[in-house]
Image: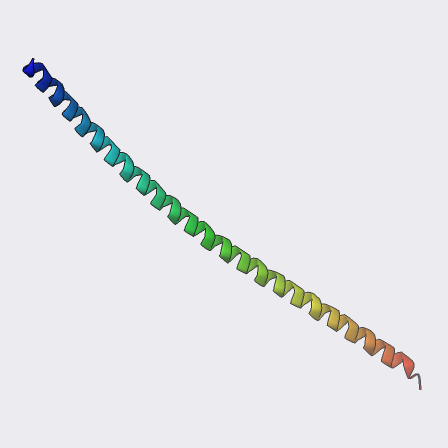
Length: 88
């Protein structure tokens, strides 16, 4: 009877050892996945910030060009009106 109890205990210890090792591997894999996910998220945040900054700079440049074009147009219009008022 003692012999069968020892065999059962030995089998249980071996199984527990394999189970523990498997859990440790799973934990390491999950940690690596989380690290990769965090790195990917950081990269996405950085790229999103760069894209938004570029879009803002492009919009500012476009707005400036439109304003300059409007200013030039109004200056030409004012110049034409000034020459027509003095027909002398």
